[in-house]
Amino acid sequence: VAGEYEYDVLVIGSGPGGYVAAIRASQLKLKAAVVERDKIGGVCLNIGCIPSKALIHQAEMFSHIKDLEAMGLKVDKSGFDYGVAFRKSRTAADRLSKGVAFLLKKNNVEVIVGTGRVAGPHEVVVEGAGAPRTVRAKNILIATGSRPREIPGFKIDEQRVLSSTGMLMMEKLPRSLLILGAGAIGAEFAYVMNAFGVQVHLVEMLPQVLPLEDSETAAVLAKDLAKRGVTIAVDTKAVAMAPRGADLEVTLEGKDGKRSTVAVEKILVAVGRAPNTENLGLEKVGVKLDRGFVTVGDYYQTAVPSVYAIGDVVPTPLLAHVASKEGEIAVEHMAGHKPPKKVDLQAIPSAVYTEPQVASFGPTEEKAKASGIKYKKSSFPYRGAGKAVAVEQVDGMVKILTDPATGEILAAHIVGSNATELIHEILLAKTAELLPADISTMIHAHPTLSEAVMEGMRAVEGWVIHV
Ligand SMILES: Cc1cc2nc3c(=O)[nH]c(=O)nc-3n(C[C@H](O)[C@H](O)[C@H](O)COP(=O)(O)OP(=O)(O)OC[C@H]3O[C@@H](n4cnc5c(N)ncnc54)[C@H](O)[C@@H]3O)c2cc1C
Image (cartoon, rainbow, N blue to C red; front, side, top):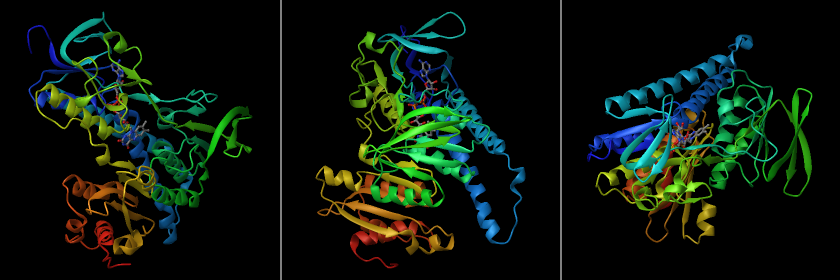
């Protein structure tokens, strides 16, 4: 580092954006440090992706009781303790947070405990336990992430009105739960709570469950959740809430203005996330914000060239893997490398870990239509794959959009068991500029769910075997 700076890069925030960026910086011989005010690993490891996936895993095992009972086993559920599932989710989170702390250490990334604030183009003031410390760095990377968004009338108290954080920290199941917002987080909690026997109402203001996903794949999930007993209301918003005995009575209003009420023990507000960009001194040093998100150009550089921003604080999809990739691009640019200018938005996989799972990349069919993109639609149902039948996972499909002129893969939308793993074969093909024929003619092991991907590509070419 040039004498006047302590670090080549100082990262504020140790989520999947910040910690990956710091380790990548260190690999590129940049001296890096991370400022963190809370637990290492950010939202994703501590109160996001990891504990939620741990709970989903517990829920999946719990739902297999039905299948065991179908074989004549009698399971005595009286000793069921949700606290065990909760504690397992905390063990997974803590283990990964410690693992990341170890990785930072191994890569010589210093962790500075405290709250960081940008005080100049190369200066961050850290307030921690002792006196405030001013750290000078050649580059600053803002990776401060996001927090749950609130809606008027539904103040989050984490007792009866919960955010995803309160939901993940809950040690006892409620009898009933109203979930506001049927995006990935709302849908995943609907699946988990329903599996554990909670009476779940899922309410979405937009016309479909998983509003960002293709309507055909989202409909398969909605139908399945409904079959499991989740009450779903789309085109509906919650307008008021009032205590009624031990419960909360919520007034819902449909698009047609019709009102109804539902009484529940708890409410989960899952209507989106707000970027953590307040009190960071950003505007004072000249960094531009737009509706709270940091405005960035190529390589995630802000209006102040030595200040970069990545992850949930920038207006790209709020996903852990997007944060990490953006972090890599930013520090590779700082190191003088020539990374891509930005993440290719058409090549970001999205994944919803309900059962069935939903995974996709590229435009939805609705989006392609609305933006005048010419496409050919092809699909293959899971029930056509022997493995899906063998493992009783026939609800699902692989849907592919291709360019009718060139055959190029534009988008894939998968709903069904293991969709979040299957999506990557198609995404690899797209990013490597392969064509459907490259997948349709490659030998896939039998029986696997991947054969549905192979058959999906044959559908594009018009020679499906198993339907
Ligand atoms: C319930 C839930 C489930 C999710 N599941 C998935 C999933 O399955 N897959 C997926 O891709 N994404 C998932 N996400 C989204 C994912 O968690 C975020 O996209 C990701 O964590 C963003 O990473 P980040 O590095 O930008 O910020 P964050 O993970 O939010 O980390 C930011 C860090 O910065 C720290 N910080 C903030 N301000 C300061 C400051 N001034 N000084 C010092 N430190 C500061 C915070 O304490 C925090 O540790 C989920 C989110 C939630 C809530």
